[in-house]
Image 1: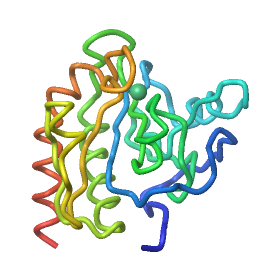
Image 2: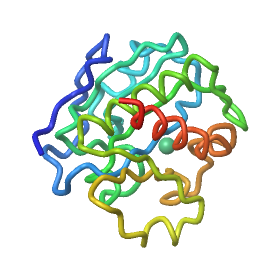
Image 3: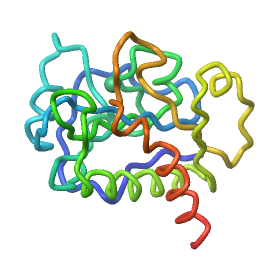
Length: 182
Ligand SMILES: [Zn+2]
C-alpha cells in the first residue's frame, strides 16, 4: 500500500520528532487529547523543538482545522509505545486542560471525517473499538479492519481523556457508517 497524507490538511508544519519510515503497515488510529484548546499553529510550534521529543501525525484545532506534523509514512513519537506508533496514525485533538478533557463538537465531527479518510486511503472499510486493552491488543484484525487504540494503555495517563474515551464506540460506529455509504 502506498502511503499518502490527508487531503483535509489545511496547515503543515513538519516536526523533526519522528523515526522515519514505519516498520508496519497502518492498521491503527490513536486519537489523543492535547490538554489545551490550542490552534494547529500553536501545536505545530510545540512539536518543533527537537528536545521536546514529541509529535503526532495530525492535529485538530478547536476550530476543526486539520494540520500535518509528521507524514503518514513516518512513525510519530506520540503514544509512549514504539510498537503502537509504527502501525498507528496519531491525531492530537484540541481539548480542555482538565478531566474529562472535553473536546468541542467541531473537533469530534472533524475527527470522524479524518478517521474515515485515513481508513479509506489505507484500504480499510471498518473502524473497531474494543474497550478491553488485552482483548484489543491481541485481536487478529482482518485485512480491511482499522483498530482504535488509546495512549492510556501504554502510559500512566488519562489520554485521550474520559470525554473522548466514552465516545470511542460512537466514533467507530460513525466512521464505519460513513465508509459503508461510499
Ligand atoms: Zn496521548
